[in-house]
Image (cartoon, rainbow, N blue to C red; front, side, top):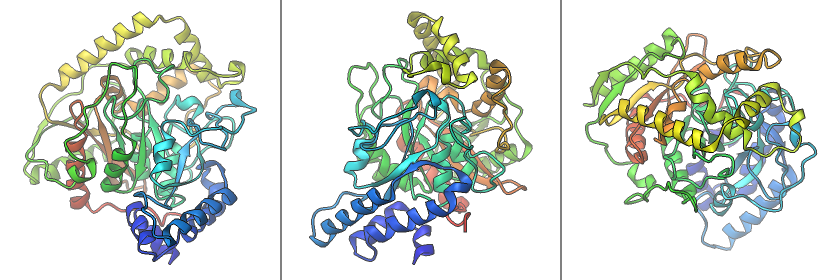
Length: 463
């Protein structure tokens, strides 16, 4: 039944456990065996814990046999990006500067709701150093590779999360997004990746992320899974001025409703990156599908912004990130920190407000915005040499996030969904961005596209 189980979504797997058609132990063993077999090739996991996971799965099977009330994902495996604290596991933040590291005594505020939802945490997933850039090639370990073609990157910074789900090493994975770090791996790996609205989820890094640019989330294969996890992970960040109003009903239910006719602004170009012809064609094809559903499509230009305008926000965040030994950090991370240390909080706050106001003014009253998630196909591993001039490398690699970073600045929700496969066999995603706190309509339109486009799920990429 192993191959068939891999084709099931995490929601379907949870139902099989409740019906006692499979055990938590069987499901956990299946994924652990795949990690043992395939992780040396794609390097999605930085640590995994077979004995601990199997013991937890057996304990969960006792609850099933006893007829106890079960949480929604009881016994389903998950992995956590290595920026979060997981009880009993080390956190290295993708950096030599955190060596040696020590097992955490707690689950942090992002991980705890996932634990309560019944997940079996198999281990920690690869990230770029501090999650600072959108490829996953830290010098602490071999680069993470794309299961669709191991010569190419799965993106980042949640590259381990994207590679694990695409390669069938996990049914679902946690990630974070501070400039596209969930949506970029979703696009490069043929997955669904939602960046929730500002304030929807607890901000785990509020000491460093004072502008609330970052959020956590998940990478999945379906919209329904994404909606269900949004319900589970939602929570208010105390002490912050931003919080998202709870929905009228669960996102899982809202996602199944029809969105009504939407006015959708489509953009095919960016002032930051030259958009690949196959990417343009994929976005245009999705626009045609949406128009066929009755939505209004309005083609327009992207706002005239540059990497230099976004850069200080990320520099300031990196500069306020605690690190044990900065001298051990990679050159690009040190360069970001050095630039951020010269910046004052009042200046960053004013810059953020000014940039946010410009972007929201461009957005206007349109219901949704359709763009590429990434303007290029997944680059080859090693395409961005981190031994070169850090400023040059950053400006080159930042082109990957040309369409994603704006939603982190404005706090808007945005979702990447699979749209096409290139002639070279690599996934292409499209991004839908909505007004502030509009996750429900994003999920609804994404669900329409999921049904219309018959996405190719990727569980059998690694055999």
